[in-house]
Amino acid sequence: MKTEQRQYKFIEASWVLMLVSFIGIMILNAIMIFKLLNYFEIPKNGATGIFVIILIFIVPILLSRILSFSRTTVTLNQKEIKVKRHSIIGLSIKSDFTLPYSQIDSFVFQDDQNWYWLKIKDSKGKVYRIWKFAHFKNKEFKAFRDRLTNEINWFNQETTKSNNIDSSDNKIIAADNIYQGTAGIILLIISVIFIIAIPVFLIVFGVPNLRVLGPGLIGISGAIFTFFKVIHERKKKNTIANNG
Image (tube, rainbow, N blue to C red):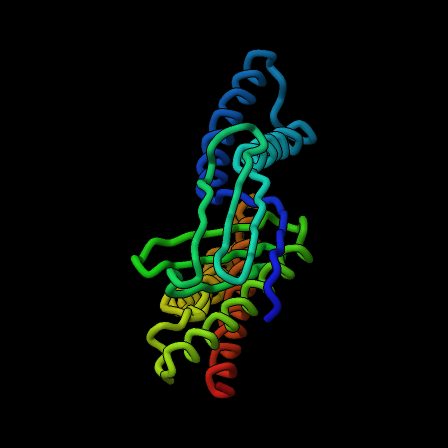
């Protein structure tokens, strides 16, 4: 492989900060909205009720994403991966790191409907994560994914040649993603329970009110997506293993 340096830039997010800030802002936002409605004696039914529900969710969604965003630059030079992050609001959300390939134990890429992840574990067991946000810069992240995979494959080949061995002890391993490991089995079981339990509940007890129907349909659709996603990823893992 010809020696060269490549840089990739995209928007990254801290999912922990996003989740925590979303829940916190949503609770505070809901309390504030209901206090204002009671103070001005505004009725909560009809169009006002719909507007209130939208406002309760939209504000925390927007603010939590702004808080958790960072502009990330990844540099690959066939020897190491360098990650530099710059928070949009100036906070130190996630730390920078430089990791030589010789210190990497395993890595895994994963995608979930335009959300792309990278998890790296070094030889000491420390875990590094990159989580690209949503629909932005998908092509850039895919190019980064392909380049890093190619460089790691090249590194493994060179390591095997230099050591003159066929053992995989010193090679970087492509690990299972969340759907292919033990967590995938747990998600599969949970999704099957949801797919069966929600319709049975609605058939036996009926629909108490229309507010229950919406979350129920969302739960079923999410469970169905998870079920087929796990099946697909585990099938892909078996196909790669058989070809290898």
